[in-house]
Amino acid sequence: MSNNYFEFKQFTVSQIYSAMKVGTDGVLLGSWVNAENAKSILDIGTGTGLLSLMMAQKSSATIDTIEIDEDACKDASFNFVHSPWKNRLHLIQSDFLEFQKQAEKSYDLIISNPPFFKSSLHSPNSKKTIARHNNSLPHEKLIDGVVKLLHETGYFYVVLPSDIAKEFIVMARLKGLHPKQIAQVFSKNNDLKSVRSLISFTKNDCKVFETRIDIYDQNLEYSLDYKNLTRDFYLNF
Image (cartoon, rainbow, N blue to C red; front, side, top):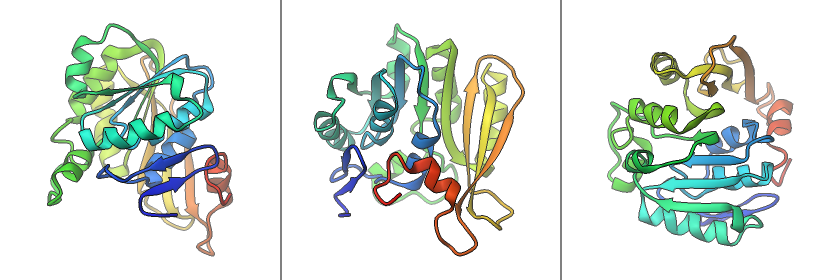
């Protein structure tokens, strides 16, 4: 692996320009999403295009992908054109808040690895700040846009730090999005506190099904569950 690209089994992600590189959060979310029956997918804040490429591999859907940053769009555009699914991937350089005002279609599936830092110090890299801090896309506005664009029977998938996820779920419920599945992600199998939450939402209130994902086992090797979840993508699994 080079810093400038990350190779997966069926596609390669160039990440020369994007402030945020390929990371575990995105791979976990993309691997966990059930996209089998989706015909239309929206990826909010695509960055390098990783999640959209994973959805293209997992489905036959048409995928619209939104990214505000011009440099990240350079990477995403390159990655889409050089993928096996270029005809199904549509990159839109836009602020999501503006996009959702003008959008006239709904989506079966919406995915996002959104900015989530609220009170921590901002990076001196302004593009990384936009990608990581929710000042540019407050969670309340993200939820409002999803409610507007999500089909009545559709699903919204998101990954968040576990401490922020609780607040996000409360906010989403108030606006008509209800959690259906939550996977709590732990660094090691003997950890008591999760580090990330993978959440699927629906517009229909329902019983929540919770699971646990451990990234590492007791020997600090990748866990069997993690390997099984991501093996369609990672070269080494």
